Length: 234
Image 1 (cartoon, helix red, strand yellow):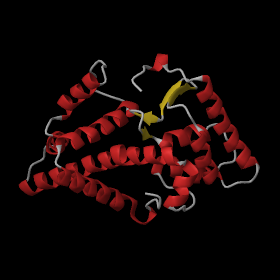
Image 2 (cartoon, one colour; image 1 turned 120 degrees about the horizontal axis):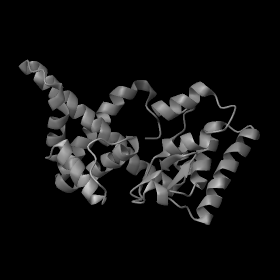
Image 3 (spheres, rainbow, N blue to C red; image 1 turned 90 degrees about the vertical axis):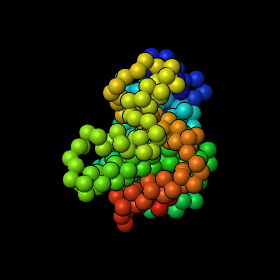
Image 4 (cartoon, rainbow, N blue to C red; image 1 turned 45 degrees about the horizontal axis):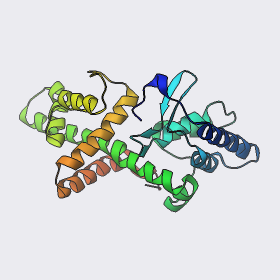
């Protein structure tokens, strides 16, 4: 996963499986199958961990173990006509599926290996981002009680509370660990990598009880955001 964008090369076997995934999705729609289950089945067939498609780089598997399923969903939905636009956008941008499926059904359609990688992404990226948001909210509330208005310091304090280091220092460690040149500003793709790196960094440097408590805190933040529309397969 440490390849640069110019050196992303899938094997012929992976490309063949990817093409089969695209065909399966389109054929399932032509056969009248519900698009969301068909999408999950097609994801199970997909093989490449990353690719360049249409001039854009897609990294579906972070560190070879965390599956960004919504990014692959976006890729598979490209060029497919007839999908209900509102339902598609709800899935891609709000993680809200168009129909309810049980966790067992979701795991079966996605396949056991991708489901495990999906859980890695969920806890390592989605929950980690939620945890940061929750701690930032705590810091902001404390500042408000003290009558302090220092928004720029909120994120920095949240990082120090969670990871024991400031954001810039952690970014430097991240780029060093990845053998890449340091950048103070990163895009969405690298941010997801960074969030997953932070998750593993926190696991290494925190006591087990603290890790469990922080995980519950992140999940609690997500549950409040989702409300009644919380996806049932989590």
